[in-house]
Length: 285
Length: 258
Image 1: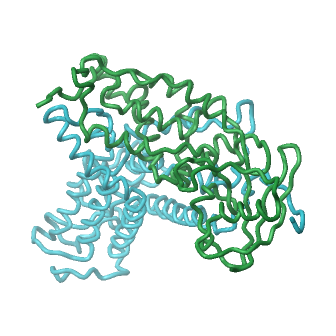
Image 2: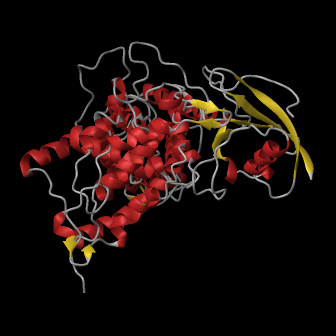
């Protein structure tokens, strides 16, 4: 026979649950990790200096901090700025507001930022961690008020559908980062290698592993087809799908690795450029 | 044999409480075994739904310590010896009694989906022709046992009560299994976007986490469907492509019976 009567079931409200495990660990880790990334990224972009290092050597080669690549414009006379020949469109524009630092990073962060923001993995992470919809599975979601209540991605958040468009641009960034990696293996035209080169090379590799596992790419190269037995195109699509799926299954892992890697690479080059760290390299400079 | 403590929901949707039970548990038992033992020895009127006891019928879905699970596939050794195990009915569906809920809403959602429409061109004297690599993706969704744990955990239904606007993960993958079918020529994307509410899903992946058949509902079912909606309604590149080249005709598997 029952020995006692206790609490009613299914208490309603934000974060209410009968779960007894540490469900808060995942959203807590995400809040910490993404907050650190956002704070560092915005701080680094706002600095507008010390994003280039070539040990004072002219000629081909040098380290470019990934948060500042590609260089659309370059402000001359700034400590740790890249030489003007690395600028896509020349010197810094006159019309730029005085109260905003002349940082090349501020011009290019939006696209990778929106690409990550609208990524299907990050959506899971921040919807759970920051908006509590829901904070964890079978844990009470943050109530939505208003005429229609919860709208998901049908209202304002319909904007998430631009992920496909930002993905097209994100592919361009990978090419640019690989060029930066190539550049980093030279100093004044001389081939060599340094810790900075390896960090800069790892960045596009990790970024490519993250980007090519993107659900939008997986869809375009394979998922949109229903017939893989239809000729050469079907076979190519089927094989591409296997690669994209392998990466897609590890999308979360590469999302975090690539995010941490870019921060470490950027910070390393900033500290080397400021003179706080001596870069170990084969050039001896 | 070891003494274990259970809390089981007893009551209807109007009134009910968690009742405590203490019972002997032997090695190898699953939660459903223990509930049956309590039913036999202490609570003959305890209502629960079950059938196969093998994780294939999808009948014994409940919430164990707050987590949606099949009680027949949840082993007692997953829990600490001194832990009180709480068993409650699925939260999302109307409670009938004790651990039994009314899941008939799900069958109504299924009726909304247009059935398969096979391409006539693929019909031969020996039947319809298709190939294994064309149906690999669809076969994953066919593993579904309709336990409705995914529907139960989906916060769109569970917390926000959007039953009118979202069919839920189980039926998103049902649509996916039809849309990805190599011989199906029906178009369900307009309903998927509007009536079925593909945009209501915000990809928090709880449906995938609780699926006892380990179907990757989100990555292999819901997101590919959302991407097809993007193709049709949001991506300027594919929209302009269709304007210039016209709608793409579905390619069908080659008919080669040799």
